[in-house]
Length: 449
Image 1: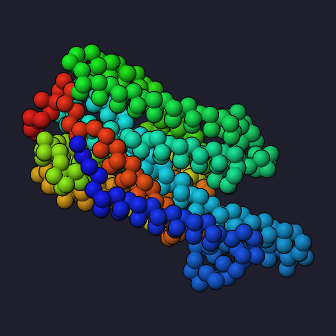
Image 2: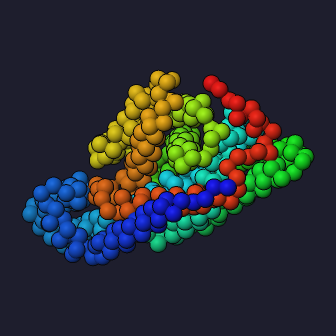
Image 3: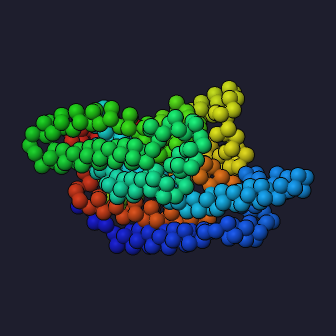
């Protein structure tokens, strides 16, 4: 049985404490009045993003011109105040958005690992059963991570913050398009769907875990494997539908005037590559601690091969979505990318380098896929790259040009990283690290590429 090292446990707790303090600091540092916004803009006058927001997104220049040329001082002042209120909401959104992004990143790792686990069972894969306990440990984060995501989604859907523009009744009242989508995009609809999805995902996780334990304990292992096979195949049908709808509700609806038919697959590609990367990283951590002696270089090679392959798949979807929309140049579609290229140029193109160019260079060579430190290096960059990807998905619609990578963003990642480590490695202590009851375990032990 695996025992959680005290140093790793302490490390996870320290990350959570530092992260929590930073998250609280982020919320406390946000402005509560437009007067504070003006002061913050004035203090950042020489180069901050907040000042940039004043010129790019506001009515200041028009207001000043109007007040001089036409004498409409009251109207100009009203526009000016409305702009400062808009910037205030953007600044208040920043810690919420940072929390949302980090929470979703680690949640999607656990959900992706669950999908990958189901795929291995349904396909009756012979190479991977020695990694099943690692996958089961990672999926344990679905429960706490799912509850946190449900809370964040519900708070946002009921307009507790300003993340979802469709949740604001004042905005919807003046927007015919949002009125047309209100039957789907509403607080109760999004929250109930999120709850149903989470119940389904967690129910499969718990049931498949039970079947895995029964395989270890029972003499009639084929009986439990057949049940596991059937429920995994059914789950994959449920998953591919619910994952797509989840991506629309939880991410694409940040920009409710824009949509992409590739969006569900795009989110899935990022989800699965992050999950496989995490499986590889956790496996190598356990091996460095003297465990998983039955996992060999060929298993690591195959995981790295999946990391490489799904990085290509993610890039294919990213390029397909970007190029078709950009080439068609339909205003209501292309504005999504115009905003990101103009205001988020570095993270927008940087994530392509991190999620495509870097994995290509590092993992192209077959021999490098067997070198642990190469795989670890590639894995860390891939995970960071997909955090940036989520950043670019969420921030332009919620924070606009008031974005910055600082205490709220880093602290949120640290907190959820600590929670993820604590939950996953604690779950690994609940059962032996070898799923001995799986009928393909002998083949998996002897696997050689």
